[in-house]
Image 1 (cartoon, one colour):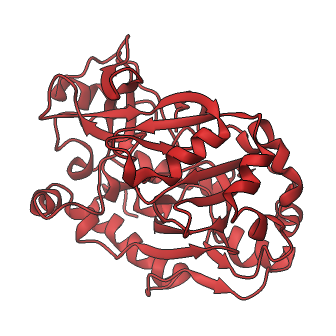
Image 2 (spheres, one colour):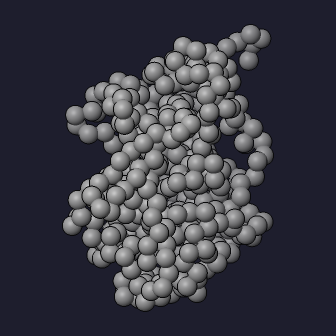
Length: 384
């Protein structure tokens, strides 16, 4: 690169194309393996190149595949267990919603978390269509499978053996997810190597590699919290005090017909760029989701109205790839950073915080929490 040359979007867009041509492929399909790989194959072909894959026939030895199809079995095994359930009016927690006092702008909303007996939680989740304006999702994270669902431990593996050997460590956390067709997870990334095993139902993923960070228009939004009243059956949404800003992906990849034109105009780098990778993970399959890949998740329930999955979070290596990503993320792009009123560069997301904050009306010393994913970063713990 010539001295004094300034990296612009032309160079960044070329990177999007090159990473697909040289490593990921241009078909927007995630590679499928018929059987689990050996540790060497997994490390060489997927972990090292930071490339996702789906492994079929990966859970055939798990009793959970048959046992968890029965609500009676789950309720009996967890009859005396209280679990944390995330409640929202629409199934979208840790996502962008209209600001409670300025509806023309957005805030980052976290779910109302309520402890309840597991049978009650499963009833709420499985009967979503019979309950208005209340969507329940059992997805506490923070190692919730080993903490809250220990009674089910013998039904599945404590870790994925070939992944553990390849990565050289045991999982830092194992989480259980029980949701329904209304539960969605907005675009985010995690600083973990993620082995995502679906036990019942299906999970639908949209994936973007870390190189595409500018396409998601990460901007700081004021944090807010849902509160649910059992007396009235209604939600309220209130901003956190003191005000805290959470950098979050601004793109909704599934806009409604009413908002599609507006969304495409506001976020052209996403809608006009390379097609995201897309895959469906079915019961008995594992998705390897590499660290720092952005993902948007929807789900389709089984015949009992729920989708159940377990994921294993392994520590990522903070190596040269992480350094490359931080450098790429630091490249200022006025189109993705500061077009909207809340665009700002904070806390390592973009270098010169005073530039955006001064022009966009945010205080230079604003409290901004860098959040890697849905409650997957303890600093933002509330939800996936």
